[in-house]
Length: 235
Ligand code: NDP
Image: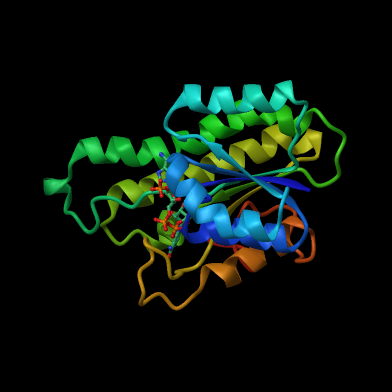
């Protein structure tokens, strides 16, 4: 399979890229900073030559996405899986009275509009082929669930809640084309965002997500919001 991963230079994105390469898949590994991307991916590119292709792309910059897609179309490339992984966590635990609304905009720009832009432009590369397992994975969070609405992390929780809704909408839209869509909570994992005290690892999460993509983990066909083990999450 050929898998697009955004935010592939570090954290969960790098773990997803690594696990994909280990399993013999090809990865279009996207990142907004070409130097950070090259540095993050270098060991992988050395170990799995020809399998990992870095692509510079900022999910908040529509023209950078368009030009990445244009290059892929010109070389008649297709993809089987989109993993919208890029994300930011801003304004942590700020009360509404002190919230910086510009940061709310920025968070939505990455966490919601980013995946929307990626799907908008990459969908033709995904749907132009006759495949069996076309899949879109939007990396969400339990923070976007109603049951976790504790009154804080407004931009993050709201953007992930909206991402879940977008995933549900896409699921209906793409059902007839045979493309599966999931919003996936990756667990609380040790990354720059999750911190050192997190109980989980990005490697374990990446293994679970790849199992879901490859159909090795049974997932109920009518559930969109799941965790990395394929279990249903509360909307
Ligand atoms: P990190 O902060 O470690 O990595 C975030 C990634 O997103 C980086 O590669 C970063 O690139 C990229 N990114 C940020 N902004 C943009 C942009 N504008 N364009 C392209 N890429 C961008 O986070 P994690 O790996 O922990 O998080 C991955 C996903 O998992 C996120 O969606 C997050 O919300 C979700 N998640 C994580 C949890 C955790 O415990 N870690 C828990 C629940 C959900 P750069 O290096 O250039 O900044």
